[in-house]
Length: 301
Ligand SMILES: C[S@@+](CC[C@H](N)C(=O)[O-])C[C@H]1O[C@@H](n2cnc3c(N)ncnc32)[C@H](O)[C@@H]1O
Image (cartoon, rainbow, N blue to C red; front, side, top):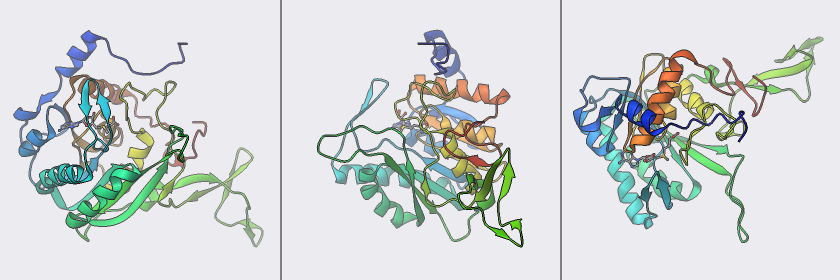
């Protein structure tokens, strides 16, 4: 591969080095923050402070056969997956502040099982659908190129910052009132408007080999997606919890945006990737596709 490949790959020595920086799930201090815990979330949940979490971002294994670095998640029946979902919801519930927001990632099929359970415990406020550029073709079906994020809150008292998640878009029909631009501006010869986001996000790029956030994790979420969730629903210094952290994307973005984080992941290699990315975020706080305002997909930064 050419030198343009920016995928983060760690040697065995690096995995051992970065994994050693993680907390052990069974040894977490209740009041601790800003760590990756290596181990089972259901164990870790017993040791996270009660009512301490402002923002919960859950990207659970979807109900699919998936190999997570040798640990296989097997597709379940809908009722088994419902029981699994209920189990993690009940484990996180005591950790959430009354003002907390909860985002849960799903594909369309898992969502049919997950959403009714979320509705039992939380107020569901929206279903965000984001467009993946990639998707596997099928001979007898439409390609699945969308994923959902269910937006929920614990109560009616919650934080939401719409201005922080506006999108800069090119204006197709620039309207003038009294000869002056109406809600748009000109920059380097192009006309733009900062627009309010809808619940359909078509500006996200799934990490791939030439993006510096890319890792070998099979279901890594884009930093830009997480930046939207974190900016909309938390303030600086708030605590973000990610119980199924994978390569640590939520924690990395939380750190870049000056939020506190707790990330739990049971695979040691993924924990090491998360620690490596968090170390890199000390110096480099850039988020591809975000420049104080969200830019269109593949916009130059
Ligand atoms: C969908 S992936 C999360 C990907 C992550 N959002 C990212 O951007 O890299 C789910 C992760 O949950 C982990 N996992 C599954 N069950 C777990 C458990 N009981 N405790 C901790 N981690 C778990 C898997 O190893 C996998 O990495």
